Length: 352
Image (tube, rainbow, N blue to C red; front, side, top):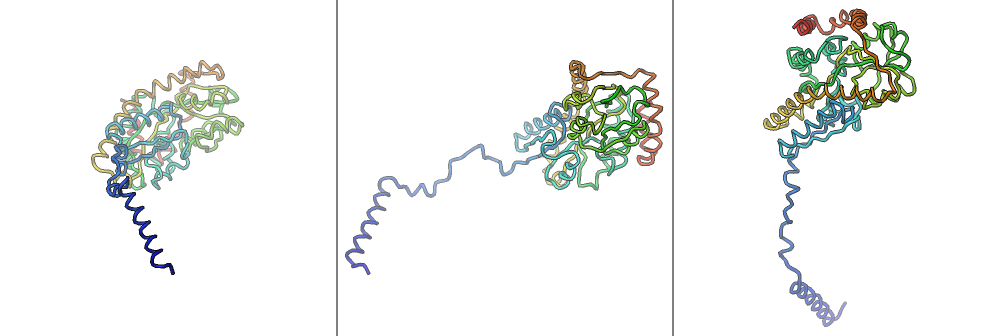
């Protein structure tokens, strides 16, 4: 036990040190003073983040539309809603993104309409060969009764259909020969999307197919597992498919467009004001990409011509009619899934 004198000296020493610190620099106000205000942190806890996943290049119509949409939403909400774009399948490929959306791991995707045909058979009508002969007809389908009918099909899917985005007409490419006549497809192997209509299309042309993700197409062309594929000139150019293909036929035999989807629960948890801003931004983006998608595909076709690494062929009117005739059986089979009423609506668009 310390002597009482020693204990007293130690206590006096400690007290003197505390007193000195208090006098020369220690301010009790420092312990209760609030942190300095940082305006960069304001509202972050209330910020809504939309992860938008897609599989195409940023320079394609879909990539450009996603960026335009993000800019509009962030500007109109003063960034209280942030849209993060994940392009080129960097987050999910086209076989996984729908499940990711349903589980709210992403909040928005814009798959090709073909990707919904297996789950929602009425969507097959948009894949019919030569369903549309002009961009005007595509718009009437997307923004008219056909589009409304298809969007309504999604009401029990955990996904909310927000609208349709435009890309362009599809062309055929081949490694081995120019595809000018239906007989040129015989015994060839093509990549296709998961659409029963597209599968029946190639069957009508006596060609075989493999179901492959979009971002695996170049690789499978390069190793010659497949000999050809169909796509817009924008996708063909930005994915450099011309490096693996010798021939491109400007056939305009089908239209490739997208449906914008969001997670249903995520959407319902947004305020009415937030929903209105997203809807208006999407509508403005749709109008913008409808016009710019045509320009983008035309520009990429010109670039393909400049590469001189792929021969470009155009079907004349007689060849187009031969293709149409060869593909007519696809319509008969497809009506079993889409219903006669939807098919009649498509015919009315053609007759106008």
